[in-house]
Image (cartoon, rainbow, N blue to C red; front, side, top):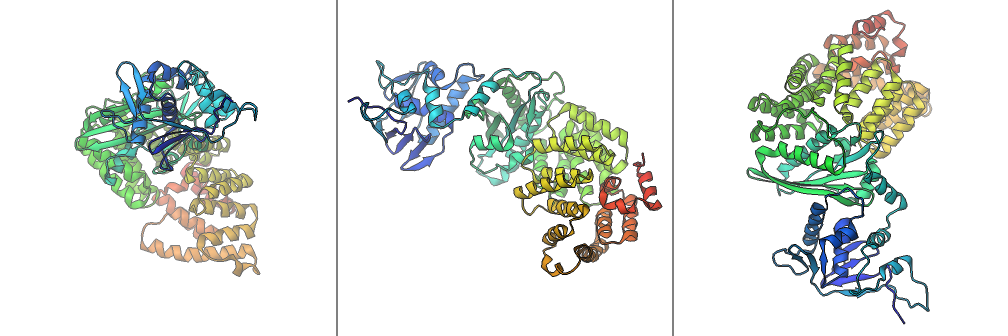
Length: 629
């Protein structure tokens, strides 16, 4: 009886085994991490143990015809990954031998183990088994034309994923937008203090890719990308969560005055490596390397590069200046007051080392405006410094979208220069439509000017570009609330709390939405969670009065903080109005006006202040801000 090879076949060699059905490489029973494309190459080589397999045969078997791919780099990457996984040495191979100018040969002794064996008379073979069984003069030689189908079945690629692969490989029509995510570059330096450098590489790659043909290429924002730092997760799952068709991943090894950067472009639908490359450079050339990597990826995606708008030449920036700048970005992204304060110090040092370093001035502008926003220092001190830094960045690099967003936010939140602020936001979005921060900040401008539909559109775009960010998700709820779409706000915030159950901004938004909708008991429950109190003590009382009681307690605590130091008067006014203290609320709104509290721009649309709109003092405040139109 003739034996049929089942889809359960396992190929063993030494302490390793290749499980075809599950797509796993195992060592002594433990799974060894190997990405799908290198796994396909290894399986093909092992199936032809002892035979010379040419690079052309591998290309025909593994890389589907019509795929836009740098095959040479892709295959070299796969072989390197295989050797790393097997612990094999290219100079003294035990398993995979390189045959110069010809191809490769799997030189280990292999054993084929069938998990399920049947004869023709006993049962019909499975589809996978029928495809796997192939007779030839080099048996057991798998059909090069069928190997893609084989592996697709064994790793259970879906029809939808296959269709996405075919569509993505064609030149997209002008209306299509390819979405890509840059995963955190891995720090291979063996020094955790070098994380700032690998994180900086990730952020710089996101920024550079965002400026390449922005009409057709969208890039997921840093916050969502960084959630995968240190997490070994399947590329397919990442693609599904972020809504992207392509992923860039890479690593950075920095030693003394040299840096080695490796990057690869992966197609999510089948985890094919479309492009890979390594760069070994002096640290002084790191920004030039980033630009080269971004350009290579763009070509792999067949995306037309933009003419101009490349920013100033970066080779004049000193290695020390770049290093200082990256430390500043690392601290700025931590988001807490002390880290932001320290980031401003690093950015200032970078501008001193290189007075023409536009990116460092843009970073300094971000640091100062956030310090003013958080009331870490008074807005009157923070925002003029932020404005000076942003303007200098734009003088040095008129195409710096980050600096334009910073300047637009300063004009909007501090100067109340409405027309110029909008021009800056729109210019930033022209330069980089994938810049989530630009959509986010412009959305709040639109809300302040009562253009709610436009604001919702931009805040949702910011969310799509940063889908795993609790802040991006929470702010969608806040914009719905400002537009008085309370049901939509509640639904959105509940989704946000599924993502981050204790996220403070989301909890406050949910409580406000319930309160404004008239659902006092639900509002009380949400408020109690924020304050750490139990709502049970208020069950007999009127929930609306219970809410005021809790806010009065909060107001008393806040007043202690006001006396001790820096607190946003707008937030105090908000607490006052919720506590039923209208006059005190107006008092703190006036204080917010005097201090130019950056939160004050929301007062014209915030429904919490609707009870004050008939008061002449409130109307006069709105007029002075420039929101009376």
